[in-house]
Image (cartoon, rainbow, N blue to C red; front, top):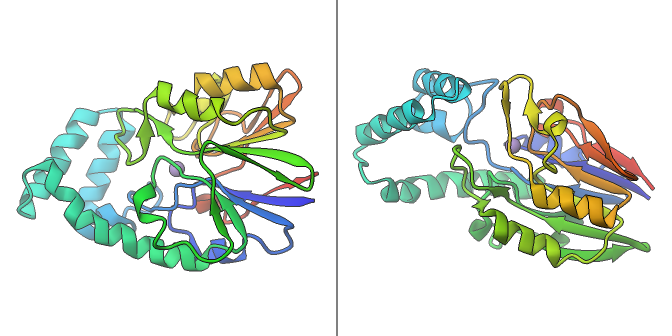
Length: 259
Ligand SMILES: [Mn+2]
């Protein structure tokens, strides 16, 4: 069985449409939305709203770890659009996110198994899913004798992305999987080599619960995304091969796993 896996699509609809070519099974680990494009500040929802110059300044603040400065920049930009209460922002963003989902789910191969990233809005998915699209979050299935488990979303972070869970809730989803042969998550296990982003030069979120699950269950593979430029794309935990499937927005190429 040839499995193609993508994660961190971030708006790459054209490449997504071809990502299942030649695959027996296609898996998407989320982060479909392009809010900020660190490579091209002229693209993404933030730039559509506030322009490329403001987006460059916002990216610079976040990249430097100045999250308070970034929040102030953001608040000023929203105020410029007449929105002062952060709770009123979603009314503007929802239509822009939905427009991206319309394009991305039209391009999403079918059939596909998918779960959410931290840069996703689960409440908007049902209206966009097409025949053959199956969303799995805290759930296991059996495909050709292989037990596959899926847990979506991220953990609470200073980045304040749209789908972040507290660690207890996240661990609860993992606990519901039972024993699997392949664990699919958006975020990696908490392993410094897998969590550190060498371009952003910071540690991204890794999950202690995912690591504990791997140590205890020892699946054949743990596949994940989230860290766009990891210090290491693979790491061994006992007999489990832990693999970052890559930043699809950057590579345009799916990760291929042959079983
Ligand atoms: Mn991402």
